[in-house]
Image 1 (tube, helix red, strand yellow):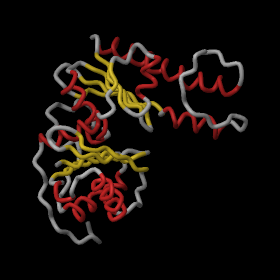
Image 2 (cartoon, helix red, strand yellow):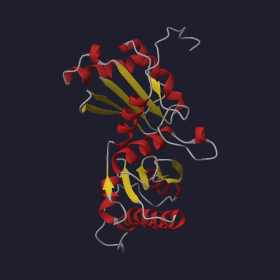
Image 3 (spheres, helix red, strand yellow):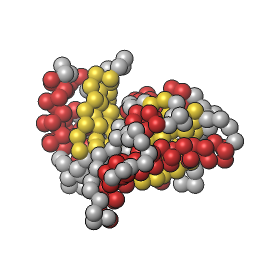
Length: 266
């Protein structure tokens, strides 16, 4: 079975695929200082609860935008499963060209989303990921990654609004029925929700005009379904897009050989 690990700025997602389907998907808050043993105790309990033995995990792949978390995640795979994980990076065989100035600057999650989206839906397309940042990634008809847009994430904007304005409370996000708020909190919720719908629709329209072709639009991330409710520009939502990218990448690249290293110099 394959263990896929998607380490983002807010959460780390662990998932197990048995060759046919995802057997389990679990999340834990990102903490770069969390040790390999902490991951092991936590995930070991969840695997056991779902009838998956540690010995059944024979491959692992990690995609991370948090370099500081990689050390402990790699050690976790080595110490608990006896396997060397494949690390998603630009130098691997992605099956498509990365047509940007510096491929190494592109976050692994964005390349993984591009891989899975083109494999699943074809191209050209725009992949929108509602994470800590809201990213728009552009894939041409051949599957090549040609660039993108990065905007502040929704929750980041909510927190910034609360921190910067003394009289504005911290709010949750939801879809307001009315655009015009008649008190502070409804006005804030409208600004956040309909403001991000406007951001999506405006950027999708500009991207398509610049690209010169009609493009499919796929969204992922926890808030994708909520934003899709208010936008006709999002055609599909796919919550497991990044995990599917990790699975596809592991199929395209040979599993690394396990090397026993000095943990103090690794």
